[in-house]
Length: 526
Image (cartoon, rainbow, N blue to C red; front, side, top):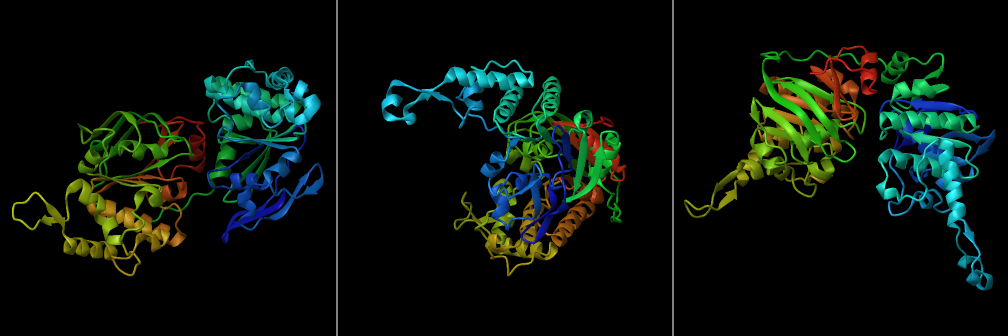
């Protein structure tokens, strides 16, 4: 791949990226979330999203010949296979049926002799032999007749790989986070398997956040950051520290933040999380322990899929959670969103358009909605004195909305404007106004700057700092943007595979962040 540049609606996500994989080579592609790895693979595999958004600049060569890959079918015809993070198996089928799907073998039947090939029957024995051969190449002893539905997750990964290598013309095999779902022993088996494949002459492109595995098997490593190649390393040059430093990049200068009346202290813990487990698909927590100090801004960082998003969602009762959470020493009920809100904890969701906002409603209704439901605020007596029936106090709602619009600088025509017509940054300010209306002691803000422009990001971060300083509000920020966390947080907790791997100061060396996010170091756990 030479000089690949890709833009989405004017935003450059890949800039002059070149990548070369030799026959028989294991080539690792690494980078933080958002570095451009997935977009580059979408170009290579001809995914529709690339060509539906204006295509790309640059050239792709396979075996020395320039090719145009417009669809995944084109990629497969050229011998490119891909094993995705998400399994693409049919649970009700056997291992063999999944491996041979869409490449079934058949044999003549009595009817086919008279009515043609379409009435041939499946040659299950021949297909089973092919499946066995593919599995043996990987060195795994999975029975080819077993139903996929009963297999351990790690075995399913091997079935995916076997399906790709069973294809006759595969020359390049791409693995996207292949060991993310594997146990340590399964990961070792997988790494041994791809070494075998490379020794047989197959080119391997290995995308992984597990830097120890990258160093163990890669012949060469390409590092992406912010859509550009920032490093190309040989096996001899590949050291964990060096790769991590390239991935994370230079530290963002920490701006001068307003002073506090009182500094957070380890002696004043407002939220004590003990062995928290959250069953959130794709973001499971596996026993988190974390003590949050009153009045601090603490960041939750880590790679996608490792559980950082599940912390707030689990505590707020949006996904099933077990464990113990103490607020100021008192047990906080889990799996009860209304009670958590009543206990003075507010949440700004990472999905503002899906669960955070009532898009068809007005700004003012969005701002007061949660407070109306959970706190019975903004209500007045009904028509009859002493009646249990209460009505919304429209004047009070309007005055409060106008105050929030002014304080948070929500750019709008007025409080009656539908939220869906606002820009992303102003929608996020409405989410913050709703949370602020609850007068919380603790605010969870999950991906608060996702999908908004640079100027709006700065305003949102400034507001979070203002809430913290003026109201002594404890702010817990979950973000994939490590640079943003380092700008405003007092401490940053790194979560890996559903557990706390360590807590770092914002000005800790880049290499420490890179290593912790890759699970390469455990230190400072509290």
